[in-house]
Amino acid sequence: MLNRVADGILVHESEFIQSNSVVVQGAEGVLLVDPGITASELASLANDIRELGQPVVAGFSTHPDWDHVLWTEQFGDVPRYATARGAAVMADLLATPDWQALVAGVMPPEHADEIPLDLFGLTTALPVGAAELRLAGRDIRIIEHQGHATGHAALLVDGSVLIAGDMVSDILMPFLDLDAADPLGDYLSALGLFENVADAVTVVIPGHGSVGGAEQFRARLDLDRAYVEALRDRGPVDDPRVGSDAPLYWLPDVHAWQLQSLATRA
Image (cartoon, rainbow, N blue to C red; front, side, top):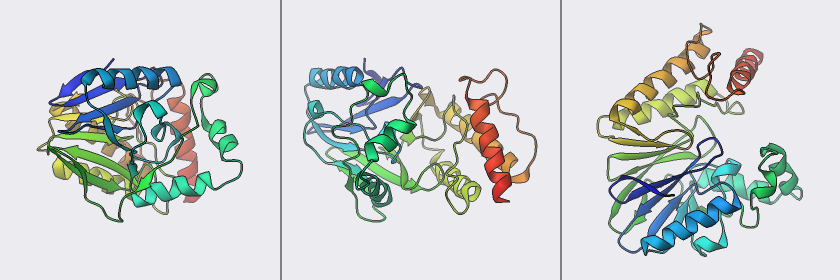
């Protein structure tokens, strides 16, 4: 089911980690951001879009994690954009002979058989440094940053709706790109870019978790910054997303792994 969260912007929430597929309506059709996750959910999403009476004219992948580069032929043969860096990551992966086995190895086993890989990762690179995405009738700004993943980007629609990718989630703490040269610095810089537009944001749509308003967006920015700064300063972490009442049982383990990885780097 699509839920309208702003003017011409609708969200479908998957059962898998509250993954959000975002539909942005334009004058000539819709932009589909990060559709997922299972084949049945993708089919349901395609049907819901048909009921809107508009075709899909383009897709957008916020970053090259497996759950953000899915597609089905039911959406149509249209460009599926990504940042130049993000598209390059996917091109390198798909050039690997055993890429399907690599992808299957990071998928949740309980859903692996339900996730289609026929059109997996076939993204179209935007020009390096592209700052906007064209959709008739909408102003869509690309906010590219490093932090969670190479070539990660958020979309700011009409100056007020932030489609954030895997950032500012109410259920997930910051997941760092531990392969980067400066994962903590990159993440803090990314949060800084979000803080630059925070006064105008009225709706935030995370890749996973609940859609929030202006107050929730500010609160999530503060919580994410506190988490990353605590890791940087090797201080205590006071974050409900990694404590004994974490929203997902495995988050404390991810937090511990991040701590260990950072300590090893140091």
